[in-house]
Amino acid sequence: MARSREPVLSTGEIFQGRYEIGSPLGEGGFGTVYKAWQLATRQAVAIKVLQLGPQDGSPVDKRQARFHREMWLCGRLHHPNIVRLIDFGRADEDIAYSVFEFVPGKNLSAVLSEEGALEPSEARHLMLQVLDALSCAHTQGIVHRDLKPSNIMVVPTGARRNALVLDFGIGGLTRDARRDGYATLTATHEMLCTPAYAAPEQFLGAEPTPRTDLYSWGLVFLECLTGARVITGNELYQIIYRQAGPEPIPIPAALCNHPLGRLLGAATHKDVAARVVTAEGLFRELERCDLTGLRRGIESRGAHSSSPRAAEPDAHTRAAAEVATHAVRGAQGRAGAEQGRPERASAPGEPPSEGERRRLTAVCCALTVLGGYRGAADAEELDDLLQAQQAICGDVARRFQGHVASALGDWVLLCFGHPVAREDDALRAARAALEIAAEIEKQSTRLAIERGVSIEVRIGVHTGRMARDLCATAGQTLGPMLGRTPELAARLSVLAPPGAIVTSGETYRLLREQFHLSVEGAYALDPSAQPVEIYRLQRPA
Image (tube, rainbow, N blue to C red):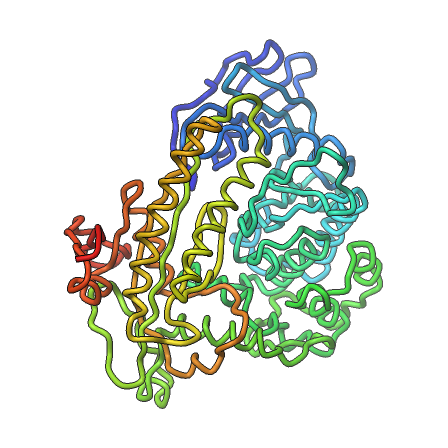
């Protein structure tokens, strides 16, 4: 999340003796961007300034490594539809900067917001240029990983508008393009992407491939044609489910029997193994595509998949999709199902419904590495250290008959009560949480002596509702667990003090006879919800 900060540079300032600073252009998690002018040529440029010193709790070494990775990647890219890197360096110990050509115009997101759907010929023109840029990157083994409308500039210079691709800041190299000394800067299951445009495999922490970018490209192209984002949702988990779930990406009815529809269906196939496309191949096919009969403002309503490769999801995909569907619907009941009305998901403090409901207890462990290594800091070692702590969480959970539902960056999500629900799920989850906290503290003491670093863990526990028929998936390997129950466990972990375990009111009522719990305070776990009391789990009674 971007945080407001004091300006690093001031309007009119001469920076590095070569650039006159103008007004800020924008601010994000990776730095602040200013318009500026090169003194020698008066060429307009965009200067991105990254503060490398301690500021938001993120590892300094990883921010530095990502900055240098971005500069290295951008320095290899030479294409008329990719924004050009001009210069980069360090202003002082805590500030790095990069200088790019200044691109006049608006990003594609702003264009679509103002103009709505584009003419099919205009959309094809822009998307061909984006494909050509991606082809250049993919040929060198570079994957963008965050292609979206806001990372595509639409430039009104010349006889018609043109597209330029921005921001390879979280880009990576394909496995075949890596050489000795390449450091992985993304931890296992860390999700660096924009969910509404991310390919399904990105939610599983898979290796970056060119097909990942082409899935995103397909979603952007569809948005250009219809004027509406393809993947939407009021909550993050809804967006993730629609991306990672079994339903194919909907292709507008007007395109279902059109070559353009078949091309987009192939590019947006959910299964990366079946997404047999390349940037060069799509470019050639789109060039040949006859757009006769297509008009501006293609309706997205009534859309369905036209992909010739779409297949019935296998048992694993269906099981994972059921978990997500029931989580999104809040364990839909008989009455709601008959009337087509999804029931609201449980909130902390609500009593569970009787009859067709069972409880699921989610334990979210948020891990943080503090301090620096003795000697040269290595981002790869930091990742390995976090993964070792994640493995400890998983091992403890399995001893208490739980399992790892997902791991994302510094977070681990554990599940108790699925695929087989038991009466003591919350009890076993609490014991596992206490043992994890104790084991991480022990590891932290050892690491402080051996490496000069320490580990903190914050744990949130919430018990929500689950539909009975999910038990039919016993024995299956589950995909990511989505929905309100893990979401609220994650929010509780944010509120927990270092080394502490915080529970919701629902979990408190299940544990108060067996454990000592104290009131931690009253918090609104949803922006629209009233504050509810949460509790700190201390020890068995």
